[in-house]
Image (tube, rainbow, N blue to C red; front, side, top):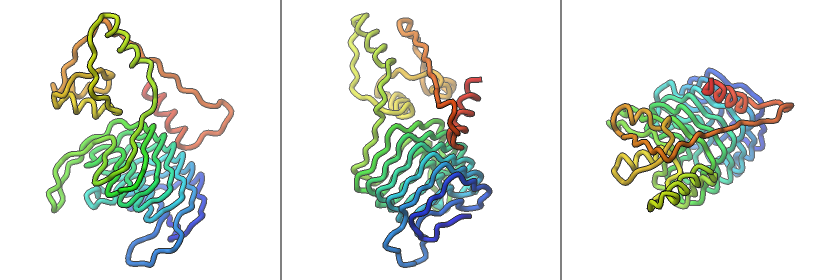
Length: 291
């Protein structure tokens, strides 16, 4: 729909891109054997709304020194072309020195949310909210074939479900993961958010003089559930995050009378500031879930 045509130093802000059969926004170098320019990227993509896209919301090949922030990207992937390996809300190849932050990505079918494909270097994905990534053979964030340092931190990822597989390669039905690394080294995955509820659990065990052996701590609820299903231990997780597994018998709930914890979450924002598309969508999502 919109392409920077292998350009650099563009600023794309506060735009709406909607109803694209394939790709809504291209910020990199197209393929087809063209000679790569010396400089690609150095762009700012901020506060845009990308909606109703068949294959890929934002794509970029060989993008460098680019900021992608505070965008709302939704309803991507309805062409069901994930197994052509180019489908995603955001997909970058050979990115270098890029920052993807504070984006809201939601309501995807047959597409990954954020996909860093091949030889990425010093790219950070932080503070993004990702939800409703449905029927994907990968999941929320996926990086592959990258051997230099990249970082994923402080992202919220929920409700990723497995894809149906298929194609001429007879790809199996799997996926639905939060964060996936494939053929990749030196990637840092960090969730450095302290929680008072962890301390409540520790104090409860100490109070009743019960030994607590925590051999492994994992950053995501989905990973924790998979490990419990593999009979690697027991875990405390929010009941709302395990309802499906409890219903189909994959997990068993054991009530603990000594632990009755009510979680209070408050959301605040500046009262007199114009909100971006992504922020407005996130507030609507939270209010809808609460009601």
